[in-house]
Image 1 (tube, helix red, strand yellow):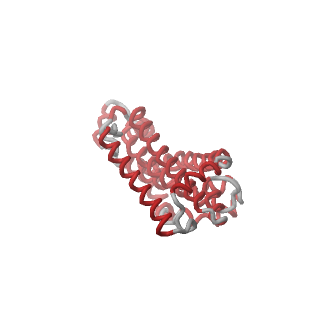
Image 2: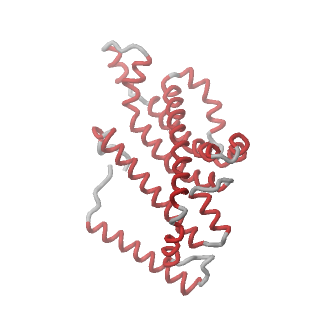
Length: 258
């Protein structure tokens, strides 16, 4: 459940940020004295003006890669997780393959992403898909597998004996929180995978631009892009939490992961 921030909490949080900025500026300017090793806060703020011309194309490219990979992961991970969680035969059939692929890090797929999709938008979306798939699959699987037996028994007593009907009308509503929690985890993992995926071969995107400025030794620009990535990550996190808690599972408010 998203809690309202009180005035006292706001003051304490703002004080922490203010102290961090002062320490950062002091260490950078008077101790490190090397902008390549640690650019100062003031240099980073100045660099925001210079990168504004790159942001429209970089943001649109990164959002395209991210949401394409996430959407496909939700469809495939959600569908496979639901079927395997509900049907034991399907679970036994697919489980060995899933358990073999699950421990492989998403970034290990980059060579095949380049070979299969070349240096296109699909190659970046594929890496994001791999990163998002397993959190969604696992949480969906567990949600459907752990559907309370009393729910299905009550539905069968009332005449709902079709597996498909039980899957849609009983298991799906019961597992929604687990599914949404998996998507929430996937958003964070997919956002991190996106940065690594865009470093390889693209000519736009937040990850590509961050690496480009590193190669140019413009570390203040690199930190500026790091801030942008962090702020967008926070926005995605809180937007998703608000959407779920206020719209989809409002009836279970208070049980949502804090």
